[in-house]
Image (cartoon, rainbow, N blue to C red; front, side, top):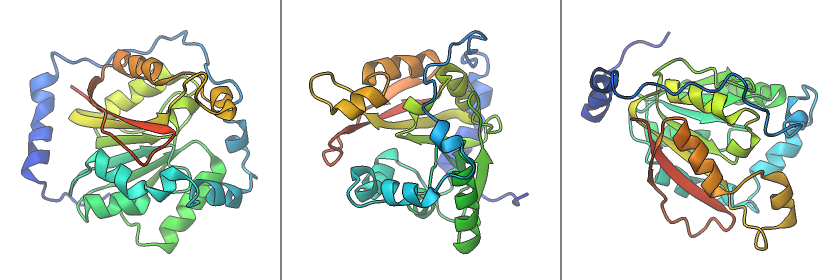
Length: 241
């Protein structure tokens, strides 16, 4: 277990927030009969013998806007020194170096994924790099597997549309974020007649639907920063009351 460490005044306020909000912002419960919404979408990632090098080449290619402008995305997420951050659907670890630079030596980073091949790769990269602050977490189809009130910021990039049981997963994320913390979502603009056919087939719903689902999980919409360099994606920021 990591030793206790001093926190910034901003984080000290976050620590007091549970006392102020415990009676007014209960965690919404996910319905026990929630239907699976993304049948088969994650099958390729659940194969423990999958060729992870293909995903490294795909996800981290400079031809992908998300990879080329990863630094700008992390800047928009407003991670600060000393913050504890969880990256849900961390994949190959594209954003790890950017977030570690932002949170500094006093922050912790949880690299969360459902894919055995991705988790193995993340473990290897942690061992080979200066990633002492990184904890690799295996989630499942209904839960992030994060401890309650363990993080200040949750980041979900091009992964929300892969959630098979979004209400269950978001309930677990709501519990994991400390009151006053933030949730940052990056996903694809799905606009019939405008978006590519692949995107229309791959992503089940557009921004308005995803925003409504996230708000129903107890989050409050904060703002949508303008991301001029993301040609097919949007970024939404929510608060956890």
